[in-house]
Image (cartoon, rainbow, N blue to C red; front, side):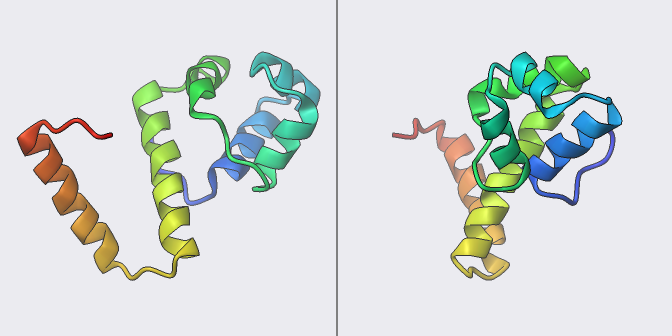
Length: 108
């Protein structure tokens, strides 16, 4: 992935599926999901399972590091939106990440 997406992760999966001319059932089988669950993911009614990121990367020949960045940024954005946090939350979170890296702390 060369550019970062401006859509929700499920919408991104749906776009990839359509661009690659796969049916819901075909992609669901490749991701070891049933089509009802994939439909819920594409329509933002269910979260995509992190454990399936490698499968998604393989199916669409995507860089796993970029895909993980998109996946986790989606989770963070949704949490900030759902909790009506301000943009300062992101700045503070970045500082906390740097702190954790500097201390090499293990997160519980």
